[in-house]
Length: 96
Image (cartoon, rainbow, N blue to C red; front, side):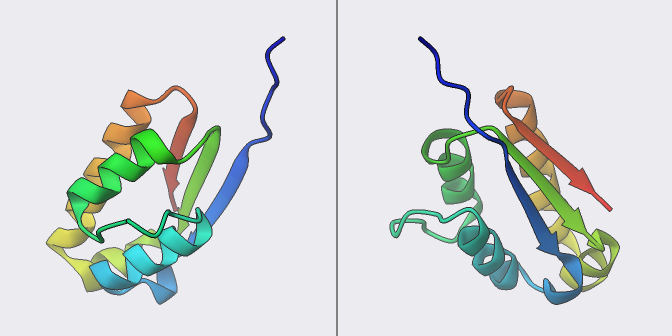
């Protein structure tokens, strides 16, 4: 018998995420990343696609504030999150 998991609804506070390091701290805390998380994009992909159980709904609130502060790092992270969403049927991401 298949057990249905409850959806993890996670909100990232864009007003407090102004750097890639702050993003890694926030997402790893909210999703309870394993201790071996390497705080880089490759490690983020690995953790989100293999270690974190779904379903997950990730909402990055006030993402425009983060975008202004993070610059190209924001673009890299959002592209990765969108790719994770394509890879996993139980992972959804929204930016607001």
